[in-house]
Length: 440
Image (cartoon, rainbow, N blue to C red):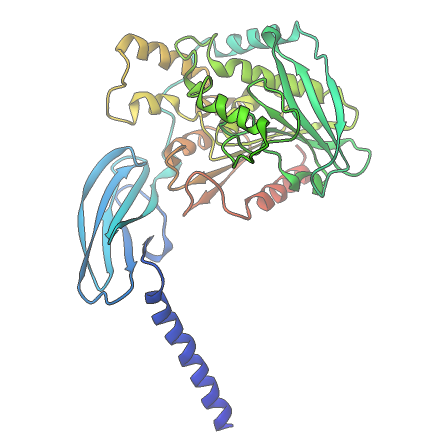
């Protein structure tokens, strides 16, 4: 009995020693976490953040880390250096208006600079968009819809090999869009005859990408994943044009060259005029994809879902506001939220363009603001938000969420930047299943 107990104690001491001394043998690291794992506060509260650094050798002395406290990483509230004792220290911060307090750390260790970040929300339920919808918002988009309806769908399909384990059949799709352009995409069908719940998948920023998601067909849902630039993908779906280029992959190289050349900065193309803004045709393309889906007998038109992340998340929210055929929305770290804030209101610094140009841009972007348009969405909506997202800041994402009028759910990614955690797709599918049980 004693021998067995002694062996267990020896083993336990070895594990503890490995944890204590193994950390020192690893590369240096830095960490910041809120006290007691609390990421949400009310105005008047103080967020307490614990900082810890590890490095080879002893931390008996004092280490210094540079810190910056800001609103969403944009408006700087305080910055300086913090002394750490035995590799540990604390920072305090608060907000005087609803929003997100972000803390960024940098620590110089030898030739390296290590970084970490933490975001905490204050009275997030009170965050609202800074602008308002134009008075002619509805007529503007009805005109865009009427323009599209004058053009036959002219669907062209080519069956191709399946690529996902949940696919039964896959088709390359081409549809007519405005101004002689076309919408290209890939249709994935699950096993069975249908009619299937169907996901319209809109990709994130980039050129030539569609961003399909295999889990949907495995769950019995069809997927139409579209490309938003009117560019045909001849060989295969592309997750992102910035992916690694194989030496012989001329197609991906072509999209990369477009992304870095003619289409670099396309989000700003035509933003002085709402009729010529780049994403007017893109949103018309999403409407055209819905036109096509509604012609298919294997699509359950009472259960059409729009899905996307970043650019695709914002366009998904806008599409649902504009088109009532969409019955549920999933938007991951959505862009196009509170565009006015990105131009001036929450930035506290002047735009690089002149005042007259800025006024035109503000007007144009109000027609493409997912946070403002969210008030028109009646469909169940799921939003994912990254608390340290520098691309689509959480304050702006919450401004859209709080403006929704239908059933709504938000998933907080407390330690995530511009992306989502590994289990996000599974949560999306489970959420959609619950909405279908309730009746879309």
